Image 1: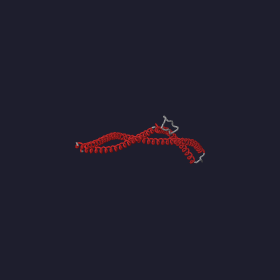
Image 2: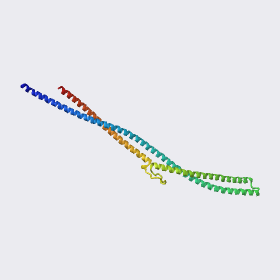
Image 3: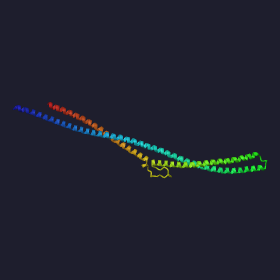
Image 4: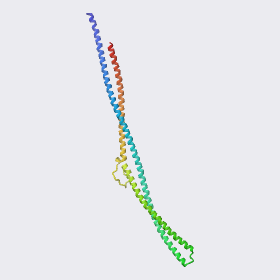
Length: 281
């Protein structure tokens, strides 16, 4: 009887130790399960963020290419505008010079006409004087032959001067006609250059030249290409921000996953040790 009573406390003590160890094992097992769940969730997030980051990287590369192309088009439009402006300015200068030349030719034409009138008048006087001298010579032998020769030569020279001046006047008229044709051609070229320049920039630059269409810088070729660049630049900046934000999230989640994996490994080791200790006891 006393033997049985003495064994009872030992059994109760052993029973209490076993229950406590089982409770500890259960708690460790639950922690392992929780840690595994956390690792799985973080792995899923990392996988999702990796896929998202790869897609955003591809979108960023596309946006960068589009931005570069838009910048190239914008720069090309600006270069075309500069060339058109130079063409417009050169056309205006050429037109003004042509108008000035035509004006000068008109002046020369008037001066040559006046000169011819004076030469013709002078030639008539010289011719009359020559005829008079010749008639006087016939009745007055005292008039020297040298005088007759001089008057005759002067008359011929005057007639030649009139003829040459008429040729010069004809050349002036021809030059004036050519200048008028050039002026018309240059005027047309200038008009086309101005309209083309205004069409590309969307603004009127010459008050006395009417435009065929309503101009607007916002809807002009240059304006649209500038707007396209601004849009592509904004899209690139948005894609870059989204990509950087996702990479930051991914890196943070990877760090959390690493900590969770370390914690899981530690808990698994602790559970394995506890199980071994339980079996050994």
